[in-house]
Length: 86
Image 1: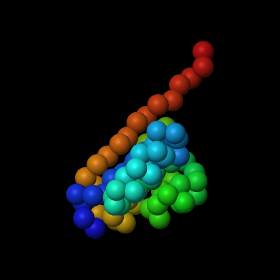
Image 2: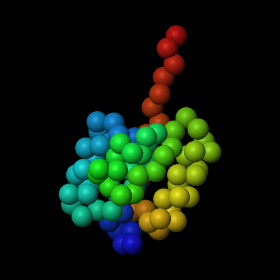
Image 3: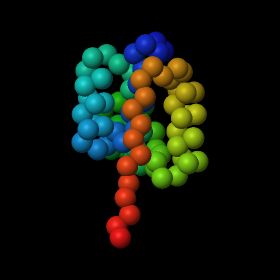
């Protein structure tokens, strides 16, 4: 794979993440879509991986799986946003 056009997008099933995956794929990027339900992004890219950002082991596994599948990643978009209601 050409790492200069390979991206890893976390939260790829959300509004911003999904839009970013669509944009990058339309511009000939290879994109790894990471989210809790990878079947929901399989229509965007064949490289969908499962991970919950609140689970450190799942995050590490997704990074390793993506690296083995795609090699070096040039663009990472990672956000860890969750809240607890008080």
